[in-house]
Image 1 (spheres, rainbow, N blue to C red):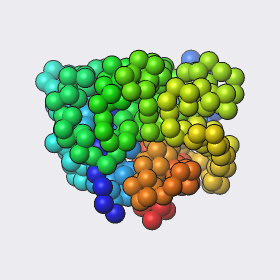
Image 2 (image 1 turned 90 degrees about the vertical axis):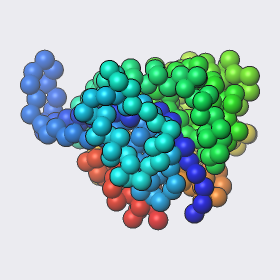
Image 3 (image 1 turned 45 degrees about the vertical axis):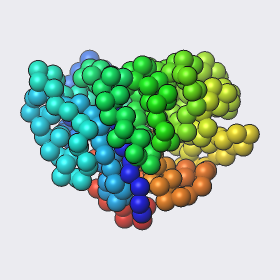
Image 4 (image 1 turned 60 degrees about the vertical axis):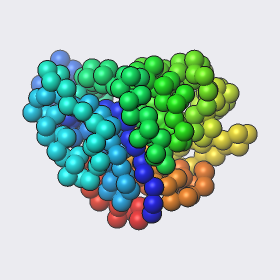
Length: 298
């Protein structure tokens, strides 16, 4: 498998709490807390490395201990970190989530302010390197201006992840204001898709997003699978069976599976099946990235 994938966006230190019993508000809840390396873009890059892809990761790390640990871990995994940077006096991103006893997220807080330094000017200095990629993948932790810069200046296919209902709006706004309103691939969950299009159904949302310039669209539907659109065609793939252990990172794994399938030359919409397999691998793991994902997809 040949090809270079450049992944751009957030890298966070993760604190994940898994409750033992039903959640009780305004009280101390018994559970299990794990520490790990996360961030949507970093998780996507990690999954792709485990699948054997050549990955270059572009992110910002703080000068704190978390930044050092995460940067070193990315290099050990096999990521090319030559486009990333440490910033003195900055705090590395931290993501805190609470999952109920069934493994489903009930609350989360993302402190990702450091990503504001991934500005258009920062990206412009690296444009030549970015456009040597076979695919560019970014998350919407980037600002609207930075997302629009990638849309306007990337010669490689650009694939974007919505991250959250708040941040996904940046992608839509960037498309509306882009000189070249076209996006190779967009992955949103159902809640994000409805929020950014102000629609009531994911089919309505899909049509609006395609009208804005999205070429390949994936709307993940949780237990109901994934809805895909391209031009005038649509597909609905069911979720794969399995007991859910943890939902954190499943959406990131889905997009990593899609990118991996594109790299292998798998045609759309069969790429979604690789995404579903990657997501299932994560759902069956306590970690945001399943270290055994290659055994499931390869």
